[in-house]
Length: 219
DNA sequence: GCGACAG
DNA sequence: ATCTTGTCGC
Image 1 (tube, rainbow, N blue to C red):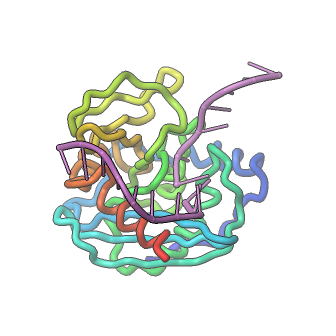
Image 2: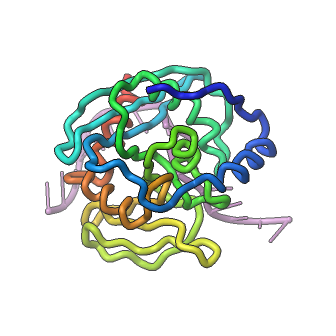
């Protein structure tokens, strides 16, 4: 797919913060999906030495079979700073997405969406840049609080930050640590939860992210 | 000031 | 994220 990479990336957190404050206004948290959903994709990034390796895995939906994958390498140019993950990972992800022929209807992204201090986690940032429906799927908490969660698969609780529901804590498998789900772009929280569950037939993590994870970190 | 802190 | 083998439990 064609991707506009003509913009420059910030070199300081101050600059990055300003970009977040600007882009947060472009995020859409209502459903604007292209139906029917035929393809879902997972994206992830692995690091070694000073290189970033981004992986994209496009799966058919709802059967979740691999349709296409891509890998891209690029020097890591931004450090990991909580709240600024997107500036470290997105450049390589865009390179990998550029190589994909099948444009996914929904992307599942490792990390938070709106469950972010400035409501612009990596899923929102990436979503606004490529204008594709995207869901933030994080394995741990960045911000917010929530009530205790029942042990049954499918149960969830709203994730609250500054009196606002910014995401959901979702049990994707009984008796296992929950995932933190939030809107990235062009999808509502309830719909995001539905699709995450559809992509999680067997393990804690969605098939999309499991495959992308493996591609990004396999040796 | 102190502790927390996606990947 | 990454460093790392076997082992306990369903």
